[in-house]
Image (tube, rainbow, N blue to C red; front, side, top):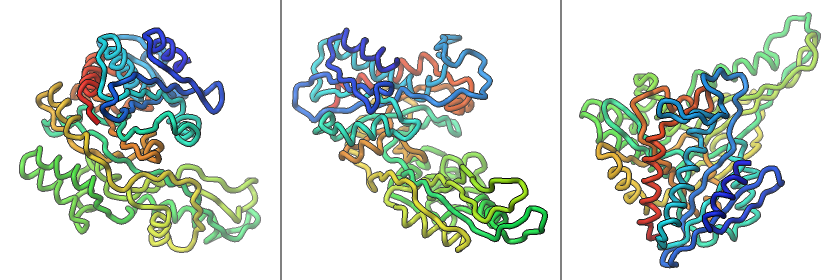
Length: 409
């Protein structure tokens, strides 16, 4: 329904669209606004699928899209229907004003980011790469928003992201009757493995993009705080400093380590039978430049030989970002907010940018939002009471419009 609605908006404005999908119920839209041909096309990509609201207690209907006290409430307001609305609005503004951009503007409205992209970006890249021919740069989610920190207004612009590496670990042990004592069995091995994962980090890695991110953040703060942030870049001190940072460590820990979390456990089939085999699915996120063999090596070094590991899926991302557009994006943010401190950002999660990277496209997380100093707001992503200020949407739309005007390839 969302893709159909967007298609009507764009076609009524005279913009060329293509609607296609792996299945009819999960269509994607690719729109193209013709430019002068003086630069390669620029891609704007965003998803309109959202996560569930099940078991969440909302103050206002999650699919009402209600405007209340200057905020739009609803699932997807931040992630990422609000951002797609900014892209569409900027594109329509360019069309309405008759401005001819240097290169074609391509908009991809995607139906399946939250579940891996198999019906969305991944499917398009693998089956219709011709729609993105010649594109070198894109903007997408997860960047350009206000991050209030120690009195400063940071604007992280994503230039790289981690890589999905899902794995399965299987532990074995003697089975038997549930009435008989069992020590050292599969359940015990699983418990030891999960406890070790819970209490230990994988090795520290200082990648170039993480180094740039932390260095520029440190420069924005007073000397003492800046020095502490810079000490994160000393692998012998990294983990100790993270332990001192408290909740702030959540922003830095995943960009300095490969991470693994247990998510699904399967084992046993009857209450009075001790299982001889238990499997656990592991959500691995690897830093750019690392691969499945690195993940397995680090896990085996930490956990020993009690588990057998198998890689289920690996979505590769380039080792080094192309930063050619970063300065222009940073300037646009500073114009909108003179207090802004733009910084390059390594995302601890993943976006559809990883799929477009397979075509050689560098995605920047650039969906700018001028946000109030409210720590709870971004925490509503994927949670109850997701909402976005109208003023933030207007700020982001203006920023993207400026990008479409200034882009020169």
